[in-house]
Image (cartoon, rainbow, N blue to C red; front, side, top):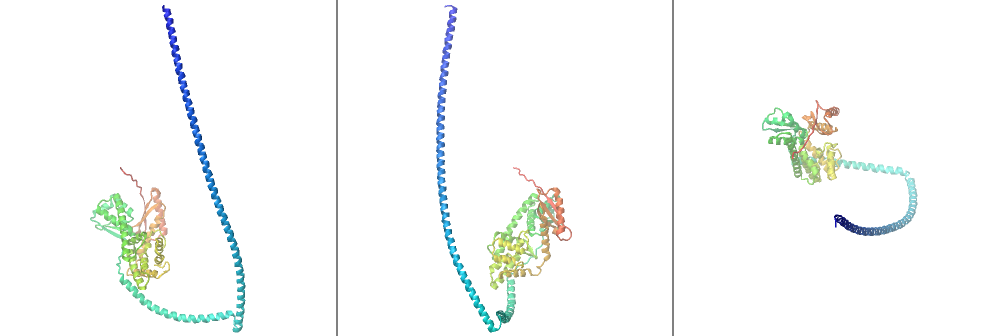
Length: 509
């Protein structure tokens, strides 16, 4: 075979191979197409199955909902049927009652007519009898009645006057004698020390060098102390002593305790001052509680509410007519109890009302009215009996005494106040003027706290920095000064100081 023949044979073999390869590829493709069609049929069958299941579930849910709604509808229909039955039954009862009322009304109407007829007959008979009596006595009924009443009244008045005069004379003699004995015995049985209180406290210092540390650099320590306590520190030439001046004894006591702690500790700076003042306030609250417990133990009064106990303890740091108010209340309780025992009155009631009679003096100064009525309202709000409350309110005759115990409390308070040197009205008016000065300043918008210091010659006002800016402080001081000039009467002049302090606090962790 020549080369041409070989070439043709090769081409033929190549064409046959290509044809075979193409047929195999087509066979594979047809196999893949059949596989894909099988998968599509399987997927379609799966979708049909899921659709049938979904339709079945939806139908089942719809059937269940329909059954639930039918059950609910049946229950509501049954409930409406029951309600209609009850209403129908009540209507029948009302109809029956209405019929009964008609019958009763008819019976009552007949009885009323019968009574009217009887009353008319009785009136006619009385008129006939009165006319007969007038013919017999030759006087009218009105004249006879008036004459008889005058005669009886004159005789009764004469006899009553003689009897009352004798009883009054005897009672007056016996009452005077008895009252002297009761008051004398009560005073003898109640021996309470009287201590004159002042408006200043003196704190001793270990040396005069401590004064410089109290003042601090550029006066920052003393300013911080005075702002936190509301007192006035007087640092003068008195050797080894500092004077604390404040009309409010509670503030003064807090300042005294705080200053003693600062001097003993030796560390005096604004941060330490604030911490010590808070500690002194807590300690004073503890002392107030102890003072109240001692007072109720000494007088035998129990069952006071925590609010009344706290107010009673505060009276330990209040003065009235130069006497400590708590000691005064204890004294009045003993006096009232002794007199009640002698007179056979309620001793426990008299002592309880007497111990609480000045409780209004420890109340919030914003409460208006006499302290007796303020104390009455406080005691009533804390569940005290009405007899105790009325006795508290009557101890200065702001209301009239309603019981013997109220009169005894009033009398015991007068006895305690009538001791030699008790009437120091100037101190009371001075304290009221300082309280009025603080109340006036606190009435302005933006004012946080106000303190009257230097015996009322200065009022120091702390404002809220978020409500009053630096430009408004001068205007506020001018407005407060104008209001003081307009509303208060005072000697000399009063300095108005407005302080605005902005604090920023952050913690390093």
